[in-house]
Amino acid sequence: MRCVGNDGAQLGVIQTRRAVELAYEQGLELVLISPDANPPVAKIMDFGKFKYEQEKRAKEAKKKQKQVEVKEIKLTAKIAQNDINYKVKHAIEFLEDGKHVKFRVFLKGREMANPSVGFTVLESVAQMVDEYALIEKEAFIDGRFVSMHVIPKKEKKK
Image 1 (tube, helix red, strand yellow):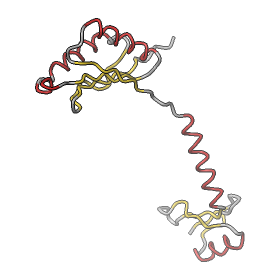
Image 2: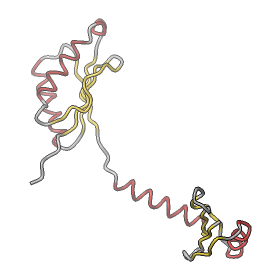
Image 3: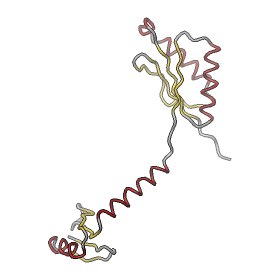
Image 4: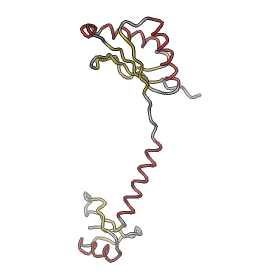
């Protein structure tokens, strides 16, 4: 087994038993770093400190991730055109803020037998938000809803 000391110094290829003894003498643990290497690589280190630093790095990486907010706009199959215009106006505001929007058309009672009504409503909505958004997922049936996901268009940097 190839062994690396706590300070990063190469201790060379030594017996596993000898590496465990060296770690015990220093009050540290022997951690297998690369088991698939030939010979396997192990490092003498304080494992508690190693795990703490690993968790700290993971938290930092999580802080730097961008959270995508999804706003949901509910419609019905028999919605009036001025109501669609009003809801699309709000959707455009959300898209300009960089948020994703999920349009859902609720199908009541016998409308479930003819979901094409919901698809028609979403097609008209898609045409209205076309210049502000890209359709991430085309209209699809999701239980009692016909849903469609749109995301904001990327702005061109000058």
